[in-house]
Length: 621
Image (cartoon, rainbow, N blue to C red; front, side):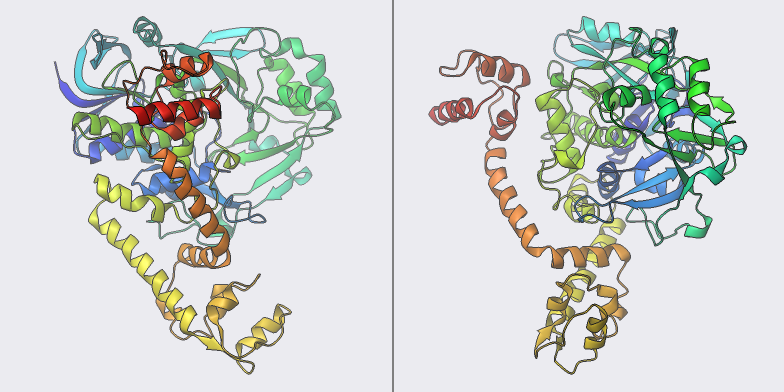
């Protein structure tokens, strides 16, 4: 019987990040997967990033994770989203090659020191009353470990649905995971049933692209990883295309609702509100005449086109009618039909902020088994679960990211404190401090933490230090450079419709003005161009200067927030018999066991008066 320090169950996006970080931290790690060739598979859209999610990918990279660098090596198109909005919501989205991305990750896992990959199915956990100590496979093999991380994604007891058909299968028709759900129930863990889905894939040559609106990537040196220095020229990137549903599409959906597994009672589980099926959109937004859809390539050299926004659980004949009603897709040929998938997950209230299961030492979870949705959310959770499994083994205190430190911290706090009623999707609106949690400054926020944890090497850290030193030098040059009424810079300001300067205006003051760009000041600030600032350094400087007042305000708010966040609650406190607490507050806090006063205040059903009583009791103790 082989022994390991950490066993990761599942080779999806959560499992891969968990296994890689565990191995990098120097412990003997085993990654079990049903199919090695499907590790890091992208069963839905082969895209990485998107609104809020793109920032998570940057955070993963800043912590030494793999998702960002893998996306940079395999993208077909790279786009900066929300460029017309503030810097707090701008982020990247990459359309990746569906073969190249998982292949990159598979090769990385198979050649990482301290990491073993094993193709098998985990049926049970080895456990006693308080601790998990290994797994049992489908071949009755017992593999011992000091910690186990479950990252089964949408595979546990999974069923695929279309129309009235129900098939026991995982995503992309893969074999489901059967047996582990029963083991978790026997252990006394609460399981929930969730649903997600995917749209049809269409043969490229059957689409009339003349009837669509082309959607190109964003020019420039754009990348998720701070290490990336090679970029795909915009001219070589593949375009996406925009189309819309129409009244004929909507009429077909309304007429065939009995052919939708979502509406005919076949599927009982709850689906994601922020990524609904097309029939869900039509029935929820009945006054909307059309819904936008995107035609997106799945591979650089294959025919498959992903019909983004058209997820459905309709029967196959109805899917064909619906797709053929779309402009440009009148003669569309199906390569793959859409389906809904239902699966088991663990109630996230069973986890603490370290993603450890509260009832069992040595057991962690990450990804969709924790109730989240999306590749990016899964990878972020996997990174944190992997770190904490190692910390548990090494008897170090849990690693917990705060809400003002990262979107990953926001996500974990949300799911383990508030629970879920549907697959959780990360949104920028969920973060209180969006201006502090920007896509450009993820390294400033998290790379020093990663260095202390030992998950990035010294070479990478020195690159980070060098970039920050360049930024400091640039800020100093901007501050000491002065312009007057006869300065040449007035010619540039005139193009922006500004009046001539008065004497003694600094370059830093100029940069604070709307529309003034740092690169345009290169000709007027001696030594600035010679610093050879990266695009991301330029962006960081502009944001820090132009939004200085707003950033200072949010930093002050975050400092105040951390005063209650840092007030820890003893784990053995007796909520059920605490005088003055409302009954609901007693029950909720006893179940969730909040880490701090701040977390307690965010529990649904806990009121300010309950928090006041809790604080009073802590002071007495």
